[in-house]
Image (cartoon, rainbow, N blue to C red; front, side, top):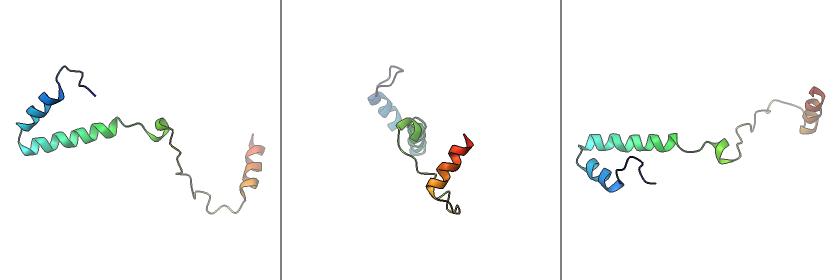
Length: 74
């Protein structure tokens, strides 16, 4: 992915190489932060979520009974 500011990656790498090690580490951490920030969420990626699994653990009703109750609420 090219940088939009007109600077190419090779020039950016050269500039980073001239920084002290602590500043280089900060840049790496910032890049990791930006990568996480711009990754699609589960909803955006279409991945199935199973965070609901086990949430009806105490419920003593079957899935069919719960479906009937849901239909009655409509």
